[in-house]
Length: 130
Ligand code: THU
Image 1 (cartoon, rainbow, N blue to C red):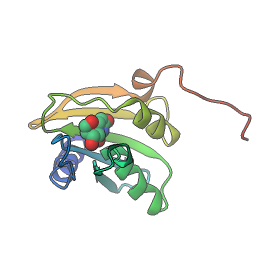
Image 2: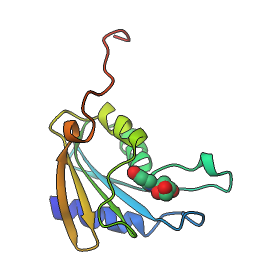
Image 3: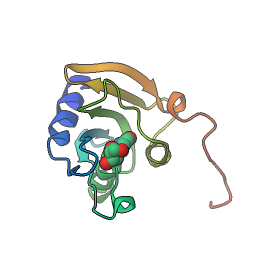
Image 4: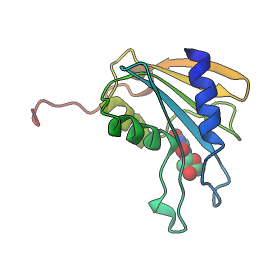
């Protein structure tokens, strides 16, 4: 599944809309239903309005009715390994467990595997919202 996720993330990266940064990113999520949901970064001329590949992939997963991430792969064309940004770590954590695996890929495959708790230790958690 690791390799399938890598291929899906790489395919998604090819669809990035990144004319400003010229930094295409792709993400692929394996959800609990056994399906893969992909995303690319989508930038905007009004720079702060763009968003990350992981966020697009999460959106696809949620709109398919899924709420549990099993594994994630991330790839960026211009960076050997692209760890998700801080905001995306929190977004991924919303749908992950501590041991959910995050595969960091280069153009040849998975190069590093991290757990969600490696990626976002001491994450924001509270019972206040039920
Ligand atoms: N980017 C992602 O898509 N995911 C990340 O985790 C890091 C950054 C995108 C946002 C922006 O379109 C481009 O990479 C440069 O920051």
